[in-house]
Length: 416
Image 1: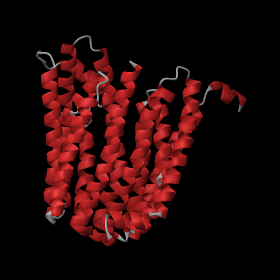
Image 2 (image 1 turned 120 degrees about the vertical axis):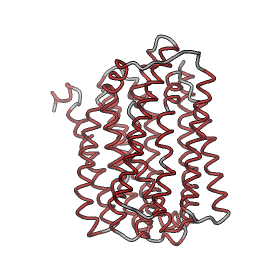
Image 3 (image 1 turned 60 degrees about the vertical axis):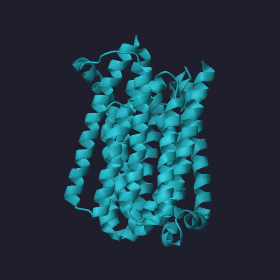
Image 4 (image 1 turned 30 degrees about the vertical axis):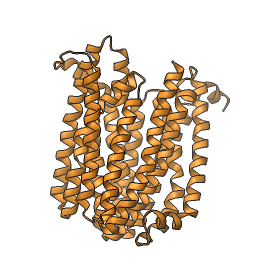
């Protein structure tokens, strides 16, 4: 069993690692093909879509997977998956409509409209059909899902590469490649589940709906707040600065998104053995403290390396048209060490099953970023957004550190 769990984890980590690597290559081709202004339009559309997509996570894996594990038979699993699919699809429709409403109110350029509508197809597919991935996780068999994800990713990368080689500069053309990735992945997951599951009929059960919504609401709110905190800076910055300046900032954030993904990958690999497997809270609490220090040190070392190599990294990935990204990246890369610490501190809330803590933290972070960015971005432009990025992550770490300190083991409190 341990070997199977370890193998399943390795497949998950391999998928994330390859996604990061391929994602960097795809973004580099986008930036070089579209230029600073076109890249700015694409990234702005993607930020809107990512916030809207959070509405589709009505029943997250934290809610669905444990119930699938406890399901008494395949028919009960099918009923649960069907109900979660319908709820996620309803959330996705709401998210897509909210995205369209936002675009209608803000009236962006046609490039942004077209890209958002195409990228938004993933809102209606990725999370609803993602219940099949949760089903695989419950059976500790992530290999098919990983292969499907990598196949869809390869198709997207090939399409983007072909468009880049053909010197295509249309933003919507590249958005089509992203939409095709979501369609292919949804089709592969759906076909796999249909072939694997036993025959059975699923009907609507109001009691199960209330249970799923009740258990998943806090996770859902947390995810919406988190995505808002991570992307609202770009929504505020885009109308306040020239497109080229926004493109430089978006390029900086793309590099940091891929860098900070390392923290999530490492935490996912470390936590099962060194945190979740601990029976005594004292041991888990101490492990979280050590992991936080280790990840923060790693993030700082990586951030300093990125800052030192910023001119070379930007020139290699984006070209000389994005020279303005260098200064932003040097500062933001060092600050991104806070993200590594925050990811580690969040393990305490996961270990104690306290989604309320996560929701409260992201509410504080989102409120802080909104207040800062609305005042400072009109004055400082992209540097105001960088300062907001630093401030928001600092607030996240402060909240996490406070919770870790307040819930330290009783014997430590007595000796303090």
